Amino acid sequence: MSVYVTKQGDMWDTIAYKATGSTACTDKLIAANATYREVFAFPAGIRILIPDFSVDDLEDVFPPWKKAKG
Image: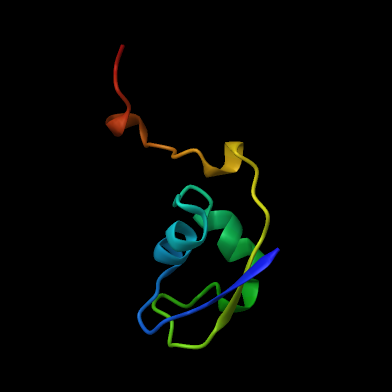
């Protein structure tokens, strides 16, 4: 597990992307930091725990209307 220290204006999806390179794990990131679950935009200096994610957790998940039809 690692720690990310927020910068003014960081949001959950941007923290997830900066920490893992993907926004797919945003819900798990919020769950790991439940104290801040209702924060939309962070002030600077908040320590966010970044849990270890598996490769499957980091795959981008698209809603049905964005998936390619084949």
